[in-house]
Length: 452
Image (cartoon, rainbow, N blue to C red; front, side, top):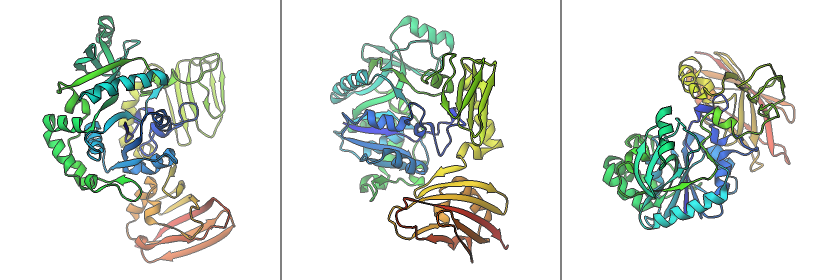
């Protein structure tokens, strides 16, 4: 069985913790481990290979957190939803390959029950069915889609219901939360896609890199133009709601999509007063039942408050009410106009060569700290393209265009300082040979626009 891991989401429902360049699946939310790492680990025992579909800008994170685990990647130039993502992955495989498709940002507590559900799903998938996983509902949730079934036979997919409808589903029985986990043969899915979404099927077949094989680092790289030809549609709408070959495995696997701060609260360790214990020092005084996720530089003190959502990062503070975290969607929409940079990334962002952090920024200057991994112990060159891996740096460099730039670089390890000036911002770079024995080099860099 081949594990297709979908990991291209933005995770904005957990802002300010989650950012476009650091979405929720890569955050150490549960027991110091990211959901992405936990998902890969969960499938080690019964999946022979991992095929990870992610956004090209998140490849560094995905690769770093996968560690030494062998994996192949499909790097999306732009997200087009689950139906195209799964189709591109299946197109790289033998049609008879059995695949297990999972999100990378869900929590599953009962691994034994999950393994049994996967076994049952694989048996149906071997017979040519498209199998989905239905979570036995424990309360009338309005934030999930539902699957209606008679035994294993799916009779309908239901949109997110209102409270009364959700309660009616529970009372009636035979309704399950849609977990977004699927099992089928790669070729069966592609044939059903061809039948029900022929334009999307044709667009996927037109992606040259999927047939040419992965590059030297194990990546398939569909171009932006190739991806824009694909319909932006979920697997449910494109195939599952139309196909006559859909089956469901009802299961109780300790599942949560962690799609809101309210669902996250239920999974976190708490003090005797019901306050979560995560992040930096917290002092809750006569406060109870609060979600307190504190990752800012100060000590967080709360006094006589209850049922609050308080989430802090070094550059943002969010306060809301428990039970209303779905309203964060509206907050994020407004921030797209007010402060889009706070949705994109943190001040410090992972890069292919280390990390870059913006300390100060003005229209004509930018101060950065660089932590550079000394991989080969040879000369390291950090140029314009390398710094543009940080989205805030990228935006500034694009605004500066082809202006001249002066560069001052201070080596924080050996206390040396270098300065330089180049003819064009397109052609500058910082070059250095790290001291032997150091695994990482640290630099303070000042970039200053000059000239017109």
